[in-house]
Image (cartoon, helix red, strand yellow):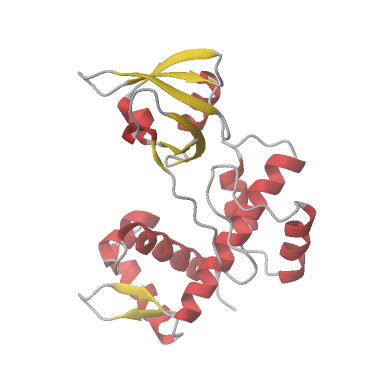
Length: 219
């Protein structure tokens, strides 16, 4: 059995590789989990000894198939717990992450399979991130930030890049939520801010920074 810390490292490495598409450095891992590079090096040696990662000093880190399986299992548990907290326990989407960080380490396959069944096998978590199935398969959704869309495009909000409570609370205050229809009414040339219409009703302006952190697909 792997420790909580080992699971957190594997999850962090998986997400970094997913984002970069290549091996990741010790410094990148240290930044991701907010620790010192020396501490990361010690943990990488342990994970390598367990055959969970491929690691050679100065050459970056990748996951073995065994390590990837562990990482996907932790991610699956985390995202299912987020959905359970949101849908069944009335947590808000800005409150679920920290609690799920603790619950993701419960080591019971039966519990997770029952939660998955109870929730009717959701494909995405409250923030629009895909939930791996029991075999580690992920349904890919070809979303992109709404900053890449142009005037008169009609799109559907599918997720967020920034999961911080502050950003999610901001979206709540503006009335934006997953599944909303958004029409790009205007793109301001000067600063690339957007005027958008939400669900054919309310019209608001959002900055380019906000637009970059909202994911959507063309309707």
